[in-house]
Image (cartoon, rainbow, N blue to C red; front, side, top):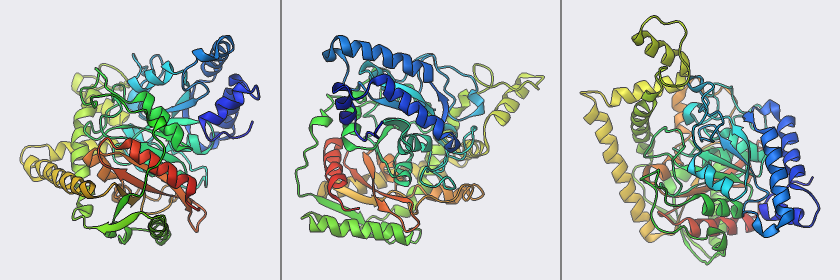
Length: 478
């Protein structure tokens, strides 16, 4: 079977009798088997996916008009997204064997349009990490070079698309966890506006930052998937109100546009010279296409990461308090009292990075330190939001690197968590402010690894962001 890069190509092949949906699923299952060494999936729904494909094939033969808009789409979901009757663990021992009692709203909307879910992908434990190495199931490996990290925390989601084991993937993005691995793996990843996709059924890390995102090989597929899963949800009070635009019908780019970039980002001391060269090349190319591309002042780039980790660890310490070894998930067998059950279950069930963030969060929320850390970080978040909004009052888009370096060696940042935190320096802004961002491949690093850049736009400007990104992906010379 040829590799399909878009859903429309795959649907046309089925329509012309070149392939059946069962054969499509068989192909992806074979790819999963071939790439087992990459440790992409923690569970594959093989029999279920094949049965669903046969059922949808019959439905299509009886009346092609009956099938949903995602007919033919084989999707992987990150192991933090609930799927009723299926295990979800957040990459953690603490939820070992736990089965979802309901499906996430995003999953329900995928299934309603006849998508097939092929499995759940490996991720950093409770989405806490930038390398996909903190998972209870072991690290995911980058398909471009298995000695390198895929990025995180949605590393499994990114590699599932990169290695052609599915057409689409759902991940989650709290500080860049969709866009950074997309860039490191050479695929496209989008985080929409905060609240654009319901968080109902998404295991919480930082509730005011978390957002489900989409990874694919084409902007068109991301636009259609977003159109289907976005929108108001009574189970999530933070979802945006109003109708969802028909993103898939709004991909005709209308230019020229005004693009801002931070000189402090492009010339940041942490940025790899190869990544910097790709940024500068993109800036010059956009100018040559007739767009206005200008540097703008941003005073808070080096404050984003400290503020982000104060706030997200605070929210994580609260969100993860529900995993107590009493009501569900892992319970330590070696306890003699209730207090001991709490302590040992959590000590044995959580990994090192999650325990570090819980303790940091408890510290910044504690009496005597709340105002010094948490309150101050909230004020910094407001300053970042105000200055970002001022930029979008004058410009259409903000161009940024997606990561300061190409994919690095497995194990390299485990001994230095601060180095891992700093890998998010260019992606965290979108989550701090709640704006949409998209990462897309722009070429190859001198090391042979993929390089991606990202664009951000103002709140609810997904349609414009997708149209401009499609134009770049289709015309930019790699």
